[in-house]
Image 1 (cartoon, helix red, strand yellow):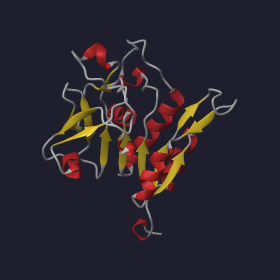
Image 2: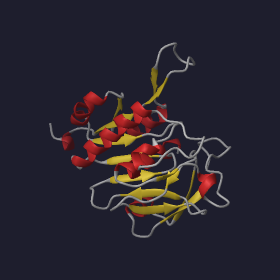
Image 3: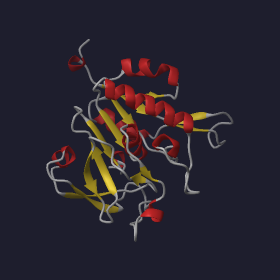
Amino acid sequence: MNVLSRAPRIGITMDHETTASYSRYPWYALRENYCSSIAQSGGVPLPIPHERALVETYLDMIDGLVITGGNFDVSPALYGQEVVSDTVSMKDNRTLCEYALVQGALARSMPILGICGGQQLLNVVLGGTLIQHIPDAIAQPLAHEQPNPRHEAGHVVSFVEDSMLARIAGCAQTSVNSAHHQAVDVVAPKVRVNAYAPDGVIEGIELPDHPFCLGVQWHPEFF
């Protein structure tokens, strides 16, 4: 069936936990607002487990990919660095599965949205690097790990004129939430920055040569 004749199926990566807060055994997690945002926009949300052997099968099933955020960091080894901050916390199996999903989606020219850590992963997959801990690299940074609830704004971002994200937003500046301690550092080749925070932290990226490859550092699903 042609995708135009049905609702688009959007794959959403899940988080993985081993704590006993939900089960004594390892479990997957995905906030409801990721799924409801897609459903309310006319898509069919399909959560994706971290089975690397099934990456191509997952990609065969979906029309677009959302790489979600989480309370963890992309391994610095994937961008040629060692861990230099004791704040770095990794989930290697999740990251490697998402890395393969992004590579496969790029090869298929599939629409991709990276949210928060998903944006950071996009930059790494495409050849860029990350700031491992913003307070160690940015003078007088904003509170990028905002103390107020995630459904409230934490700071403003300014969009780069003529970027895809600026066209989508339809404005020059907006208020966003903020829940991250890392950020894009060296921008990957062919990637364009499309949004900045007032302290200079990169808040959005896009890949102009791809039909739709977008990363945002905030969590739009809360709005």
